[in-house]
Each structure stands twice: as C-alpha cells, then as structure tokens.
Image (cartoon, rainbow, N blue to C red; front, side, top):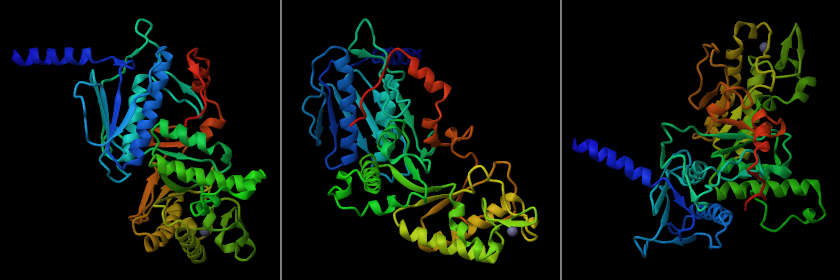
Length: 416
Ligand SMILES: [Zn+2]
C-alpha cells in the first residue's frame, strides 16, 4: 500500500514539474576550463533569451557561471557537465525540476546533444539550415513552456547510434557553415567530407589571418576560408570529421586506362574505365595500397574513412575471367581489404566503412578494421542507421514543404 501511495506521490511530483518557466532568473553553472561546455551554455542561454523575449519579458539572458560555488540553493539553476570521455561516446542525460535542470553528457559531444535534445523537448525544431521553429506558445501563461518529457536518458551504447552527415561532393562551400549549425542542432556527431575535397586537408595549417585573396573575392581563397570555418566549428562543438563516401575508385585513377587496361572493369568482354575497376588484378591491389597509403598519410588526424563503390553503380563490378569466380560482394571485399591493409600499417586505430547490402553474400574474410554500411546516405532506411546527406536540402521533401507552411515558422539569422 505504502509503495502505491509513494508511486502516486511520485507521479504527482513529476506532474507538478512539467512547466519550464523562462521568467525566472536562471543561472547556468558550468565547470571551469571546458570550452565546449561553455559553448553549449551560451547556446542554451541564447535560446532561453529568445523564449523570454517572445513572452514579452525584458529580462537578461541566463547568466553563465563557471566554477564550483553555488551561492543560493533555492535559486533556479541549470547544471551542464561533461564526463569528458572520448567523442565516440555521444550519450547524455537530462532532467528538469521546478528550480533545477541538469544536463550531463558522456563526452563534450554528448553534452551538446543533451542541450539540443532538451530544447527539442521544449518544442524547438531546425528543419533546414537557417530555419528555426520556436515552441508553441502557452496562451494562458506565455512565460511557461511545457516540455514533452521531464527527463531523457540516452546511453551511447544502448539507444543512440553515431549520426553522420555526408556532404555531397558538389555541395557549395558557401553554405557549409549553416549546414554544420543545422547538424549540431539536430544532434549529428560527425561531418563526412569526400576525399575529392582536397583543400579541406590543407586548411588546418592556415594561419589565423584572412587570406589576402578573400578580399578580392577570389574563389579559391573563399574555399580555403570555408575550410578553416569547418575545422573551427568542429572544434567548437566537438564534432568529428571523417573522410570519404563513394570514393573507392579514387584509389584507381581513371587516367591509368591508357597505361594498363587490365586494372579496369571488364564489361561485355571489353575493358572500360567507367565505374569501379577489376579488383582481382594484382596491379589493381598494389595501386590501391599505394594510393590509399598516400591519402591516409595526408590526413593523420582522420580516424574513419568511408570507401564505397561509385554512386549509382555500387553493383557494377568486373566480369573478367578471374573476377567471374567471385560474387559482386566478394569483389568489393577484395578491394576494401587492400585499402584496410594500408590503413592498418599507417594508423592502427583507424577504421574503414564499406558498402554491402544486408542480404549480400561473400566468403572473403574481412579485415578487422572494416565495418559495414548497408544503407547508403539518401536511401530509405539510411537515416535510422545514422546516415544523413546534404542532398536532403537540395531536393525538397514533402515534410519540409509542409513545415514551411506552418504558421508559427519563424526564420532567423544563423546563430551565432
Ligand atoms: Zn576482373
């Protein structure tokens, strides 16, 4: 009986705490010397200011206080904390009470996810870059917001998967920044850039001063400039950067066709240098190892690469007499195994993803540093596996058109 009463009491306890009142003088407490936590606190403070402005209150945004001192136990407080684990652990926990909100991340990245998950529970939405939907207004008490939940716990190994955003090769660098901010707000952990975007590699070594050609509006200089922005934003929000995509055939340059046709794909009895290559030729495998090593050495900080066959031709493999003995999946595995050997030598912690349908069959044993992707970005089912693509912004979907029609949609300038 006692436990029933206590349970009911607990329910009432939670019921009472459902409202989040922005008119209170909230103080955000953060630890000292954690720049990503500070950035998350600034974002949270910014969004709370937006809510109080909308409620017609002329109060200051929540103050951010770094350090251990807590002056008044009764004052409304928000605690942000990161456990400081590696960025692989992206889990978080948050809960809200009358005068206390706690948001904990397993890592800095997890904390960012926790903050934006809390804002999402309040009703914020970021359907597209530079677009922001504010929570519905409580007409009776405009200063109070009703979170959909009062707590949420996402453990990285259990309920969450690592979410990646793949930048299309031709995605204009001028919009990289707003796309990355969209990604942060939608709890994406990793940015993936094609290996064809070579300039991005050199950018990290660029000095702080603006490139002189930027002032002249030079295209190349602007590209360098956006590259620096990518690394700065990634650092600010603890985002990981990975390289690759449909880039496997980059390791077998098309121009080699004029020197050695045997490394290219046989199609209807003829060699052609369109799409993929012949993976069983020893020359091809040597070339893959050599080219892959060169790329892996050029990106010493990149831990994960994605090497998938050519886009739209993922199953267009070779039909030469040797390759005919292997299934399409086995041919793909032979090629990525060669790249995986190169990575194991240069960066033993590195990993490579390869593409294979979940129904794919193959007897070729995979190297331990490989992992499988069975739904490529843009395909149905890819987003539930954590793969997003910037092509979602170029082809408007039915949902995003509907969201644009919603009356409470408000477009704001990108933040910060
Ligand atoms: Zn072949």
